[in-house]
Structures are given as C-alpha cells and as structure tokens.
Image (cartoon, rainbow, N blue to C red):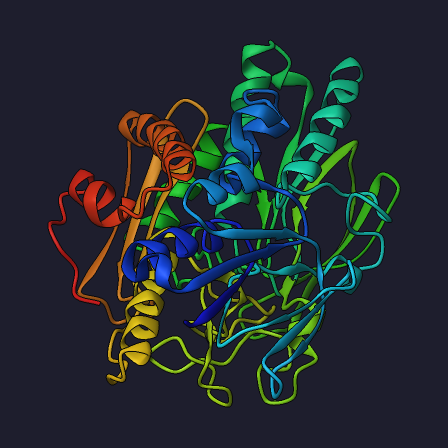
Length: 424
C-alpha cells in the first residue's frame, strides 16, 4: 500500500485527491492536509468583494466530501517538511509519513514586500482569499457612504493579474448599478509594461481591447508602476519607461484600494534545500516531479515557472485553471505508473486558458503555449464569457461536492471555446 499525502485543498489539491482515488482505488491511502477545514472557490472572490456572492456560495467543508470517497483529511497547517525522511510535521503535533507527496498549497501572499500593503497590517485590500474578499466587502459598504478615489491593480513581482482586471470591471459595474460611479475616480496601477500584458506578453488583442474597455469606462492607468509604499489613504508609485528609466514619482490618494500582492512559496516548503527556487516555488521536471526528490510532485501556483519575458518592473507568469488541471492529471498518471513499476511519462501543459468576468460581460483568452511564439493566440470579449464564468463556478462546486474526477477544461471549456483537443 502506498501512502500519498496532498498538501493543499484548493483548486489543485481537491481535484488531485479525487483523481488519485479514481485512478488508484481504495488499495492505497490518500490523505489531504490543509491549513483550514474548508474549500474555497477562489475565482469567485471578486464577486464576494462587492456582495454579489456570499461566503456560503463558494465555500464548503472539506472533510465530509473527502470522507465519502474514503480519503483522509487533516485540517492543520504544515510546519515542517522533512523531505529526506518523507515526513511532514503539523501544527497540531502530528507527524505524517508518506511515500508520495503532492504539493498543491497555492502561494504565500508576500504583502511584506511593500510597506503598508495588505488587509491585516496595511492599508490595501485583496481578493486572494475568501477572508480577504469578505473584509473588502465590509470596507466597500462603508466606502459607499462616503465614496472617493479608488486604486486597483497589482504590486511589483505580481504574476496573477486576471483578478485585478476582473475586479476593476466588476467594481465599475456595481457602482453604476448603485448610481455612484460618477463620484469614484478609478486608477489601475500595475507593474505590467502595458495594459493587457497579464504576465503573458499579451494575448491576441488583449492590449488594445483592454485599453479600449478602460477608456470607455473612464478607468485611468499607470503601467511599469512600482509601488514603493502605502500609507493610510495614500499610495507612492514610481513609474518607469520601457528601458527602466524614471518617468514620474506619483503620490496617489485613495479611499479604497485592492492591490494583488506578489506571491512566494509557503515557508515549510521553501525551507527545504534543493526543493525550490529563491522565491520558494517548487522546481519540477516535465513529469511534475521535484528535481531533487523524485517522490515529491507539485502543481498549481506553487510551482516554479519562469517569466515570459523580462519587464522593467518585475512580473511573473500566471498559472491558469487549465494548466493546473493538466498538471494534476499528469501527476495522477505518473504516481500510478511509479507504483506499478513503470516509467513516468505524463506531462502537464503550459497552455493558458482563462475566462475573466467583466461585470456584465466577460473576456476569454487562449495562449497555446503560454510562452510565445504560439500556435493559438487570441482574446475575445462577450456576454457569453460572463455567463460561462457563472456556469463554471456552479459546475466546479458541484464537482467538489460529488467527488467527480471529470476534467472540467478538457470536457467543457475547450469545447465552449471551439477547441476540441489540446496536446499536452
């Protein structure tokens, strides 16, 4: 019997548990470890932040659904990973041994890299977790009584820009519905070299399309923006040109701000020598395995992927839903092969596919592969994307409740976009 432990129970970890159980059956032991006892559908957090969703709509308890499948669950943070000894130490005092480890923790939010950033010790908000989104919703309700300037965007080193664009348009739409948009100047502040870069070097017409959308909704922007510090009601931003030279020092007032942070790997994983790059992301081979520890696999935001290109202000490459789904499938196939004494040959994809909500419409982008030059490279907008994002949320939550291992992107999203099949 093989003991398989999955660190993380998010968009990657929960599907990994279901896929491994489906592939391996009950002969082998699968245990999921997560710092909290609930699953949250992170893509819906921008909706929570404006009151379009409640916590109960996108959160569910983990243990009951995993236990129905015979999968063990422990709700405790990992405090130490002893990779040489194949052991995890947990905050609750447990020591957990494994034969295979799947790291799907997601990131640590590096708010500390910019003084005054973050919802806990700083003055900016985030939609990176449901807790943060709820805090933003509380602040937003107070803001509505006395509206003023708003700053939305991302901090230097950020890699996940989609939620910032989504929140800009969702926030804009909600203000219009409340007849308050005329009282709220909005500025988008981003380290991207241009609007629509998205950490991908642009996708199709993303630059011109998103610039046009910002203009039509009267959203100003500053690109190549390095936020240096944040004070109560004031953000300090250094704007650079494409050669990295100083253009202007900005001192921007705000009454509400949502700024996505840069990501790092979680501390217990980052502390293992030879497992991660300097920012704590897991170094993997084509089979999703650690380059130093072949029984450790990793998927999702916590894996090391190089930036698509060097930018004047540092940016990272995003890990989108389809990419994560394919990584999990590859891990499942490779662990099954290793248990059977066969060579691990399955590979995840670095293809990027995303559905982004824009309040009452939406945008979809496809970058195949993620790093240019690409075989497919397009960005399209339409009401259908907004509706597809809602349907995707409902289906994914249903999948987590039923324990389905069905690949959502492979079976539904690709067909919705007119793509029948992608080679990994």
